[in-house]
Structure formats: C-alpha cells, structure tokens
Length: 440
Image (cartoon, rainbow, N blue to C red):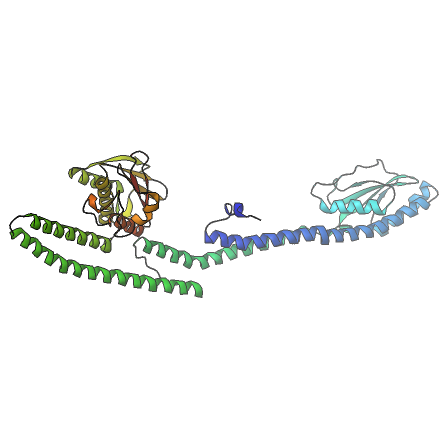
C-alpha cells in the first residue's frame, strides 16, 4: 500500500515526531483498555448481576401468580418487600414507559437481561430516578410495579477506572514530554551549531545529553576544528603565494614598460595582465570570505552600490524590481559585494544589458541577475559552477579576461551564508538568469 499521502499530515520536526511516537501508544492503549473494559468486563459483570436480580424477581412473580386473589397476593408481597429489598406496587397505577439514557451503556444490558429472563415485562424505566430502576410486569392480578436499587444490577462507579486511566495517562504524558524536551535539547543545540557553522558563524557549543548525542557533538567539534585549521592554513599559504607571485609580475611589468613599444612587447604585456587576472581570480576564489565577520546590513544597499559601480564603468545595468518588505540581515558585506560584482560582471561580459532584482520572502532573500546574452544550456549549468570552467562556444574565454571563477566564487559565498546559486533562463531578457539565494 502507498502511504505517501500520510506524510503530509505527519510532524516534520524531531520533537513533534518523538512526541507522536510517545503519545500515540498511550492513546491507543487507553482506547483499547476502555473498549475492552466497557464491552467485555463491565458488560459481563452487569449481565451477571442482572441475572441474579432476575432470579429474585422471578420468585416474586411466581408467588404473586400463585395467589388465588389480590388480597392473598398483597399478603405474600408484604414480607417479600423487606426480605428482597423491593418496592412493590400492586396493582400499578400505570403500565410504565420504557426509558433509558443515550449514553447509558450498562442500561442496555440490564434491559436485555431482564426481558430475556422474565415473562410479562412491560417496561423498564432507567431514567426517571438516577439510582433506581422501575420495572412493570404483567401478573394475574394486574400490572405490578417493582422498584429496586440500580447498584444491585450494575457495577459501582464504573467511570472511576476510566477517569483514573485518563488522569494517569495525561500526567505520565506530561512528564514524558518534559523528559523528552530535555533529551532533545542537546540535539537542537547541535543542529543550531552545525547550521551556524554552515553559514560561517562559530557558535559556542559543548557536548551534552545522552552518550550518542555527546559522541555526535564531539565528532562535530573535531570536524569543525579540522576545517578551521584547513581554512587558516589555506589562507596563510595563499597570502605567501600572493606575495611571492606579485613580486616577479611587478618586475615583469616594470621591465616591459622600459622596452620600446612593439607588437611583441604588447603581447607580453597582455600575457602579464592575463597572469595578473588569473592570480587575482584564484586568490579571490580561494580566500572566499575568510576573516570577515557578519554584520547586520541592508542587502538592498549593497545591491544598489554594486549596480552604481557597474554604471560608472559604462555598463548598462539597472535595478528591475524589489519585492517584499526589505529587512536587515546578518551578512558579510565584502563577500556579498564580491559575489554581486562577479555576477553583474559576468552578465555584462556576455551580454549588453543586465537587470538586477530582489525578492524578500519568509525564509530567503533572492537576488536575481539577468542578461540578454546567449545564456547557458541546461545541460551545462552544473559544469558552469565548477571552478576554472569555460563553456564553448557561446560563453568562452574570448569574451574577456575571465578565468572561469566568477560563478564559483558567487556559489561559494552563497553557501557560506547558508544559501545557494541557481542558474536558469531569463524570461524577460532571454539570456542567463543567476539567482543568488541567501538564508534569512
């Protein structure tokens, strides 16, 4: 059977699912025990007590029917009222009315048992008096009304078991939920620390809780420490590489500037410029947003600043739309500016126009950069996000000094903010649409 439809009604959080696993068995046990108690045990006890009452009423009915006249029957009834604890009226003023409460489950069993065991039962009234039962029977001297205590045919206070089960179940459920919250709190703290680290934040965390949770927490701290050391070592290495490589490049530039202009010198200057671009792009990609602390800023201001920089450079770039209520977010402004510059630069490199839009929603901020260039085929979009990737023939290295790192840098920055970079096709301009998604 397919139970996929059931998933939409199931809780998504670990706390909700654990609570469901805890509460559902308790509720099922309560229902099963209640049904078994009411339908089996309670009904059987009520039927047995009612059958005992049938024997007494049958003896009374036989004694009355054996009396030759009404006066003799009254003499027979008088001692039986005291010995059997019955209230007898003969002849009865009325034939009585059959009455029973809607929720009176045991009353149904009482009525069935009395009618099955006695002849001439006219009516059984279980409603006029809460603790009394009135029974009308046909005798040779007329209709006879008999009243007796209901406790003689029904178990005393049957609801006490149900109330006790309900109160105990609720109390134990509350205690279990409190205990469950204490057990899940370390898992939530571990999840929060992991999510923060995924966004580039270092949140304070110490392993707590059960042994398995402590083991997972210790593994997370060890992994975070290794990643931090790796990032630090990479940054130090790249700083050294940057210093070592920029020095000979500067010497080459100086030497070429002193040479007489010619086509060969111009080619060498272009090669040096390309090497400088390669070095700058590689360092930007490898460095990412290392060392920059998040700040509460307005992303729209960063976007407008990036667009203004592109316009001052003579590019046709404009802000197309701002949807949703703008809010300030914890971002790394230098890294986000670098990602926007790369996306806008990539758009105007392969197209003549670029339009930038912003959409705020409940969970994410989406910055869209669209161009009127050739775009990227759907099959090549994943490859385009890989470092040093150059696509041919539409978007290749002949379109400028790009080194195939612009989209990779933007993707890396988006992921350090808990987001992603999504490539698609622009519906309005026909070229590439790059969506920079940042988690709020």
